[in-house]
Amino acid sequence: MSEFHNPGLVIEPGRVRSGKIIWRSPSNIALIKYWGKYGTQMPANPSVSFTLDAAHTETTLEYGPKMTEKKGVSVDFLFQGLTNKVFSDRIEKFLLQLLPVFPFLSQIELTIFSSNSFPHSAGIASSASAMSALALCLCSMEDELFGTLQDDEAFDRKASYVARLGSGSACRSIYPEVALWGEITESSKSSNLYAIPWGNHLHTEFKNMHDDILIVDKAEKSISSSVGHQLMDSNPYSETRYMTVQLRMKRMLMALKTGDMELFGELTEQEAMTLHGLMMLSEPSYMLLRPGTLAIIEEVRRFRQETKLPLYFTLDAGPNVHLLYPHKYNSKIGEFVRSNLLKHCYENSFIPDQMGSGPQQL
Image (cartoon, rainbow, N blue to C red):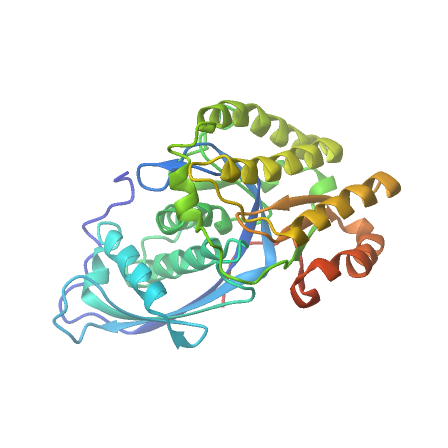
């Protein structure tokens, strides 16, 4: 866990300068889900995800000499242009946790502005995009101050490690197209500490995947993902999950490599239902699905059976539905979404998204 601790990252007295860094980082949608953790944000099972594009967080980090006597970190945080005490407290706690990684944080004052292109806390992995954007800003700040992260691979690996400490799934948002997090026998580079890129293994069939995110409910979830992960510790079916997910992961990676769209869809939907099944089987039990969620799933299954088109659904830890399909079917499937599915969404709202090229420094 101390791999990225660096006590040498301290600024000489009187040499603290000011700067501004902006990163835009996307959300991601897990195909094989990470659900359950141990230690400090370590995954109980490996996961693989598509990196998105339109669903993103833009974070601006301004830094300068510390002007107060406050110990630890000094940070002001604004979300969507407004102060938010809950978010501010979480960010300050996160930065305090990072002092062994970035000891210079105790020498500066930070102002952080963050905004999303989509509803937060509604099950679209807003913490993934937010924490990955912040992690990228922090790594850029280290590189600006010390010149220590010139190598792109080293920069991404550290950013993924830092993002993971803020939100487990955030470590996957660092990479374009496809990211893999968690140790697996199929890859010697895989790690529980950070995600790795996996897009270079991707078959051309999956290179232009769409992800239409249907907003069934914009309200904040009744049970947060953090609580959901904790409930896996006492879930009577957790051990069965951790044993069976290894084979499902292996089969998913094979499908992505070989272009087996049907197997991909089968596994993706199984994972979505398994995730929410685990929630309903936890102690205490809870459910994040809504009537509109179930209606969309039934409509998608009926459409696929009638048309034989490769339209598949998945779910994150919330009621909203992700529709995955290749770009070449965009016209027919887009028409179906608008005519049959939007009526089940909150104010007919959805985010037409797609596989993305990863974060961008602005």
